[in-house]
Each structure stands twice: as C-alpha cells, then as structure tokens.
Amino acid sequence: MVAAGASRRMDGVDKMLAPVGGRPLLAWSIEAIAASPDVDRLVVVTAPDRVAAVAAADWLPRRVTSVVAGGASRPESVANGVRELARLDPEGGRRPVLVHDGARPLVSSALVSAVADATARAGAAIPVLPVAETIKRVGEGLVLDTVDRSVLAAAQTPQGARRDLLLEAWTRFPPGGARQFTDEAALLEACTIPVHAIPGEPANLKVTLPDDLRRVQAALAPAPVRVGFGHDSHPFGPADGLRLGGVEIPGAPRLHGHSDGDVALHATADALLGAAGLGDLGRLFPADARTPRGIASETLLREVVARLAGAGLRPASVDLVIIGARPRLGGRLDAMRAAIAGLLGLPAAAVNVKASTGNLAGDEGAGRSISARAVATVEGTA
Image (cartoon, rainbow, N blue to C red; front, side):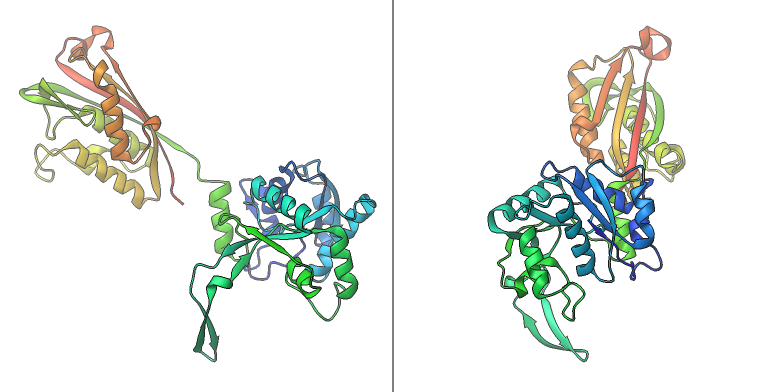
C-alpha cells in the first residue's frame, strides 16, 4: 500500500489523513485491501514522519505486518515496500505482489482477487478502464489531431507482478535512477515483460483533487438518515369517490377538505417535510385561493418530493398507518403501497401501509372520519 505522497494538488490537505466518516482516508484504503481473502500480508509505505503514527493506529488491521518509510518518488516507495515483503518472506520470489494506491479506498475485494489471479497466471496484470471521452492532442493552444481512443485505457491499481519480476526490473532501472516510471506496469513494459490487462472498476477512483475527496466521502460516509412524523385527519363529506393512499375506492364517501382529502398522502407528505426540516403541508399549500380546490393529493406529494430534491434530499422509507372503521382496507393496502412507492420513486419494499380501526374509539371508530399517521426517513442525494 503506497501512501507516501505529498498531496500537492489537495490545497494543503494531507489526503491520506483526511477524515472520512471519523477515520482517515488511508484507513479505508487499507481496510478495503485487507478484506480480500487473497491478501496474506500487507506492508504500508508512508511518509517517514508518519510511520510511527500509522504503525500505532488503532484502525490498522492484523494483516498489516509492517509500516515502512517511503522514498522521494513513487518507484522508491514501492521498492521499499516490496523489499520489506522479501525480508518477511524470503522464499516467496514467485508469489504475486499487488501494489495499491493509498488514495483508492473504493476498490472491491472482487477486483483485488481478479488482479491476484491474473498475476498468478500471467506474471503481471493491471486493471484498466476504457477511455470514454474523445482524446485530442493539443499544442500551443491548438488541437493538433484526434487520438484513436479504441487502443487507449486508463490504468488503475492494484497492479500485480511476481516479486522476482519486479526485483529483476529494478536491477535494470533502479528506483532512484535517471529514468522514472509513473506505475509498475510502465517499468515492466520498459523491460519487455508482458503485462496482462483486465477490466477495472469505474468506482475505483483515486483521490487526487479536493472534489475527489468529496466524492469518496459521499460514498463511504453518506449523510445520516433523517426521520419525520406526519399526521392528518379528515371527516367524511357528502360526495362519493374516496381517495386514500393514492387509490380511488368507488362507493365509499369522499373525505371532506380543500383538496381531495387523501389523509394517507397528506400524512406521508408531512412526514417527509418534517424529516427534511421544510415546514408542513399546510404552509406549502394553504387551504385558500392560493391552492386550487379539489387538488389531487398526488400533485401535492410530487411537489414535496421536488422540494426535497432542491434541498439535496430524497425519500428513503415510509411507514404509514390509516385509522378508520370504514371502509375495510385490507384488500387495498398493497395497491396503496405500490401507488405511494411510485410517487416517491422508491421500491415497494421501502413503503409499508397498515390499517387500523382505532379500537372503534373517537370519530374514526364511529365511522365519521379517517386519519393517518406516517413516519418517513430521508437521505442525502450527494
């Protein structure tokens, strides 16, 4: 694990120690590699002034056998780590060694295993991604020509090679010599040692710029889930055509209100607004001329979802209970669940709808009204 760089493009932030979810970025990268069943031991190469602190860190997994100082360049740091592995395992010259950037915390165990397997078969392997953008060769502010991207790929880590091949390559091109290489594959290529390419992972990004760190933070430590509660109640009116939970129930009297009276959707909307800290449904849609009479509650709920999106939030789950003695709702709860999930852009499994008679107490129990209570969670979209 190479983590000895100077973070020159991070606006003064040491990216290896940058906090992500209460732990340094480096801790996440080490954990991701150590989680692979194909990794027997792990050597961390870090800046000389960080060796003691990293070695003593309580987040260091047991598979880390050594923490050593890096050199003035990446090749020197990698060589220090590989030589430490040779010291720990002097008989393992033909074993695959994987070199991973400490600034890539999103690597999967599946990719680590794939690189290890390809290295064991071919001697050297790296993960690559196809280049999606059109590539231009530019000089003095002018486009000179367009490069054929079909033969281009972006290299990732971990990069794998048999240990004896790396040590042999460094005898030809010493790590601190005049010719420097940006990665291990380039060194092996210069020695005419074939390097096998396997598919990489788009999520396996490297933190190089401040925006990269924010993307990693969003992936590893998303914003906490927020919870809200909503309640609404309406009496029955003289008209027919009950709207409840986004479903029409013919033959049942309609609930009286300025809108269509769908208390289930109103309670859901209020719970979402509460979780987001965006007020309540009555303030957004007052029961006066500013809100069209008879407006569909689906319209109100969609507007609430849009307000959440504007605040960088989205619905995560809803638990709803509808209270009333009439009509019987047991056969309609799944349809309500599906309707609400569709309005919120959620899978049906994230929505729960229940019905209760309210123990036949109060106006609900007497069949004069229906009420609904909802608990909703929202989460960040970043």
